[in-house]
Image (cartoon, rainbow, N blue to C red; front, side, top):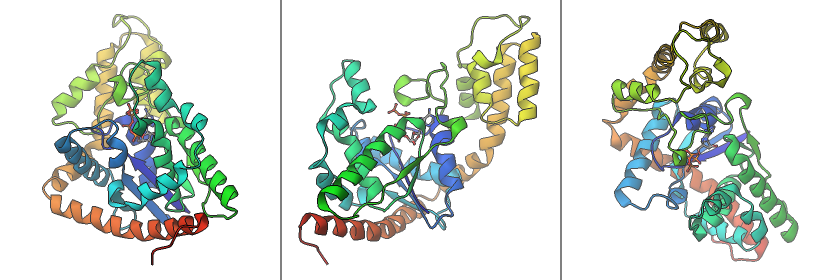
Length: 325
Ligand code: AQP
């Protein structure tokens, strides 16, 4: 099975990114093809600071490797190291109907908020389609918010194949984990950088990590009062890290009363520290080896580019463009 996914270097990864997407990357990394890229071209629609983009991109690579992405199995690369992807974007753009993009949520949401959207944001799903189609990807592990974009990718692939009368592109499927498709943030809404409700996977110090967890919004019930676990963001997040026995025990403590939200948050902090502890240690090691990380990205790009050139040639040939040997 050919697996591919991309993740934007627009800040540090949060629990939504990890449980919705990255966890799947690791689980699928021993497939026939497991290509994962850092979507720096995409990030340009929001990050317009040279040093920041470079820093986020480097951090993204280190974070993924620390969280268990194994470069011996998976191919990790920067999106912008594969220029073929922008060429394929143009080929796809020539047959992308405007109405398809107008209904895409990233653009629609921004417009609804009265914010100015630029052409990069509007055409973002076409670049994403090129990212997926250029590696003959069959399965794309993502969170729920990206499913619509995979549908656009399928539409474009089908349209291209039909117009040019050839099976140039493989139609990919989204892979979404039911339980973590939409991880909630500290306010109960979908965890998202633009909502300011994220918990980052990596924090500069355990103290800052704890402070973030203690900032999760709860209602104002007193310690003595019984509480409803299912309507509490702390409990919902605790599900990410707990066994069913641990959860039952925690839910019983909520319902019985006598447990304050501070205790529930401490529980969440302890579980998260246990869970991510090994990644924190690995990260501290990798931070000292930027050269090694860069080598991994370049070796990944060299491998991915071979596949991208093969598929792009197929597409160029189908359109009647010259093929470069
Ligand atoms: N809350 C979430 N639950 C489950 N999956 C999520 N993903 C993001 N948020 C959640 C998944 O993470 C992958 C990378 O997404 P991205 O590159 O779009 O990252 P992002 O833009 O940083 O995600 P945000 O925080 O949601 O950013 P904004 O605020 O810019 O929209 C994807 O597979 C995504 O589904």
